[in-house]
Image 1 (spheres, rainbow, N blue to C red):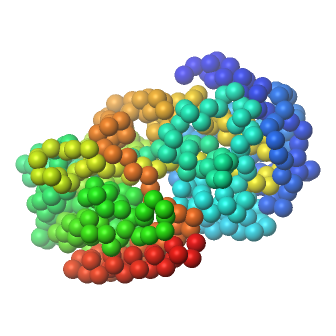
Image 2: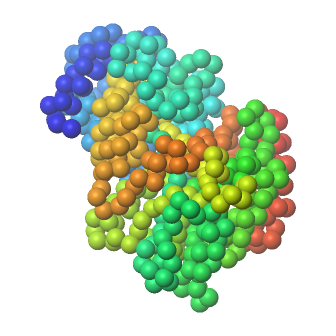
Image 3: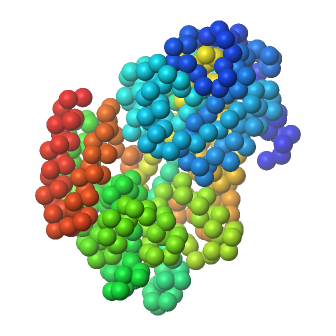
Length: 453
């Protein structure tokens, strides 16, 4: 995309959404006080660079691999607004700890990522800026342009609290060198979960120098969730008041997954300590299921000369035994982040202007072009597939376009049960024979927590 075109688009956006008279009094130095005065209503129409009270906009994210690309897009907004943006990375666990502290009266970033696992609670508690009126007056934002499942993640009681940033699917990555050495054909769309197990077992060496697959308990969206829904089970029901871990089809899927853990994976302690992605890129395992957000890692490795990594489709469960993948038998978990701001941000007009650009067709196209990740604005992710000529990324996009059934990442108002389940599964990963018992225990615990929401 030419710089001149970007500037023109930004100017159009700024004329609509930027920048009304400042709110909250003193200029923001980046972090926004949770005790500031919130503004309501849509921003006035002006393109004045001096209308904002903010000397800098602080953006918080948790993925360092996306930092450079997001900073580039924000800098393009800054070139028109005159307001610098600092994109800062906070690791996942500390990210939510800091947001919780900020919401309780401390300092919050001006713009940040919101995740489905936390969104309903944050919206219900009034922590997020209500973007509804801004969106209605913003000629450049039409919620119909985004995947509706992602839009719904950030809507509550008829209001919208975040604009979609991206969407993700899950792919099966494999080490071509290990397959070549073993004389085994690469994974393709014909693979079932049983194929994954059988090949993974063949690629696992008795001396412990190589394993067929990695997948520690932390990888639910990238691992066993896909198997559960592929088998026709579920993690949480549509009413969000009942666990599906004790459903017979869920149990069948998890028993299958226990076989993968037992026959194809390193010990749980190794996977937990080293991490799935590190085991894979250090060539200790032949396969791993990784979300599309990991593509920048593989892209960098490929550009450095490590060309042994490739991605294929997730396996499917041949429920009717007809030897073909029918609808619903191949599932990829589907999630998307949202761009949000604190309810009491000092200058909501300015932060909405940045959010609007980040989620606009132009901003989303830039996100895809730069290889940051797939974009939530429908039709813009084709350029993401072409962000590198060293890896064929089409399986990710084709899964979203019909090769797989998209299942939104399971969540509820308080999704802490998801983290609880990860911890509980450690016992089953260490002793796969206990899988059914552990699943039923998780279901009981989860049902108790859901009953209290």
